[in-house]
Picture 1 (cartoon, helix red, strand yellow):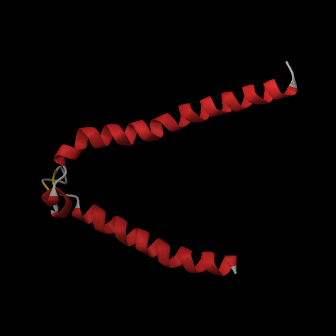
Picture 2 (cartoon, rainbow, N blue to C red):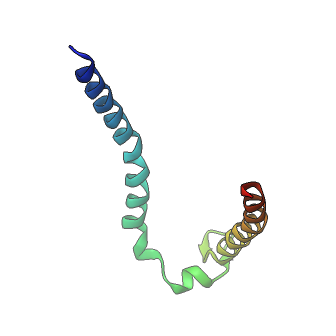
Length: 85
């Protein structure tokens, strides 16, 4: 087996390993979307949780996530730009 064949075999094995690792990254969110999309509506997104956070909506979680992302962007973007300069 020459060097080119070994390299092609290694690239093939690495590509297969990458596919096996990436497969769950796409399958799990896809499964969640297919099974859960029928339950998502405007009320679910904008209502407050009820009954010990078992029923109702997810508005506070969405708002908290948006605030966290905004705060992270406000800190990380200036630091990243200054580091790049």
